[in-house]
Image (tube, rainbow, N blue to C red):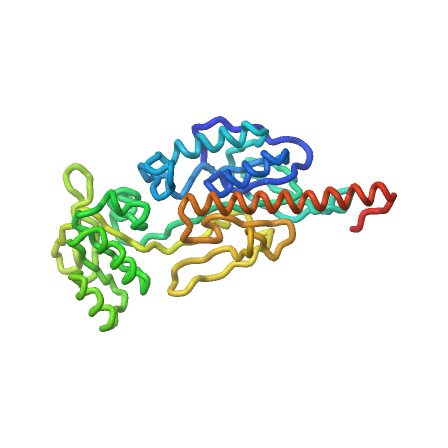
Length: 335
């Protein structure tokens, strides 16, 4: 189980208004909105954010250049300031439970360590997992010499010799984005198909194409990335590799919710399906951030979490009002 160096709040007893599964930008901002609305909210944080290996977060005004761990630290403090709780742990199971005494929805979550909690509503903000090509040595440079997003890392690697390791059709556009940042760019097809139109477009931007498959990543003596060794033994020097990863929404422990999912075109990834404000087909469950919007950066994920949190509060207000009216009339809650 993932552990965190940060203090973990205790799980409260009884049923809380909302549990947020995931402690990244989307989850914490959703929790912030709920806590500021005086909702009892608990964030279940696995302590393994997608950008953990990055030195700094970029593309989010005011916080540009801030280390990811510092943003999360501040965010947790702010959620707690309004009475929200942040509990470190991993969700082992989550499923609908029997309705409450007033007929409202209810969900039960069990953590990997055996603790459990019940909630009226859920916000799934588990984020995603980047799946890298199976190239020896690639993973160890992830977030430093190996990058994926030109907006997150592009400025920091500008004017360097960059290689684009193709993973599918989307890699062509990926290469054109990185060409904006450097004149020294090589496209490694690595077994992917590349039609004549794509080759012509890359050539028009002076992007060299290497069709020989890649065998492994080569390091310098100091451990930094030196280039790629091809299957014919040639080493092509590069300081940075750009890889369009396959992105998979994190679904561990959530099978019991039966949330709908869908595959994106060109094997780009798999996500939870959601609508406006993160609503899903499962009553009482919302999704926000990279778990449903695989291209969202920190700012967009935080905004999505805020919208989902405010929508959850609005739905709870209606449920509370309906329950109060039923009680005033002496009515029996609907099952």
